[in-house]
Amino acid sequence: QVQLVESGGGLVQAGGSLRLSCAASGRPFSNYAMAWFRQTPGKEREFVAAISRSAVSTYYTDSVKGRFTISRDNAKNAVYLQMNSLKPEDTAVYYCAAIYSFSSSAYYTRRSDYGYWGQGTQVTVSS
Image (cartoon, rainbow, N blue to C red; front, side, top):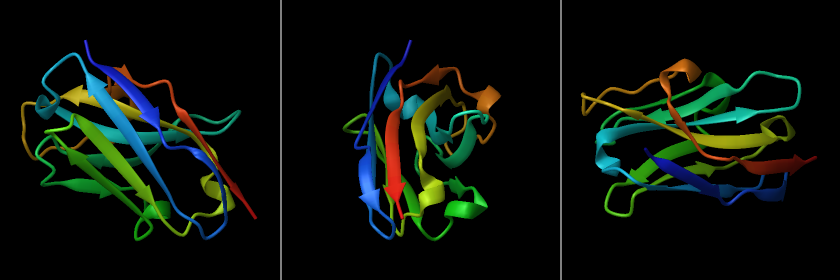
């Protein structure tokens, strides 16, 4: 079992920045590839960014490329999402997710790939 707890959400004006954190516990964190997803009411949870367990590979959905950066610190059992130049359409509940990975360089983008999820943190961007 892996337990994930997100933090860092809040209210920010358009153009501002937030840094989300996800703290993991329960299993060796370095064995897990990680990702961030987001969800708005009435919509399916969508992929935002992913990172391999070694951090050598990252991947982003097109709408956040150049604005968001995913990173991890395996020594601290944490993954982060730095969000810059925020837009009102970034408003959502953000979730971190984990998947056990045999590959040090693989990342995963499908919601169905992930077996472990945090409870989510709300990000609201005002115009």
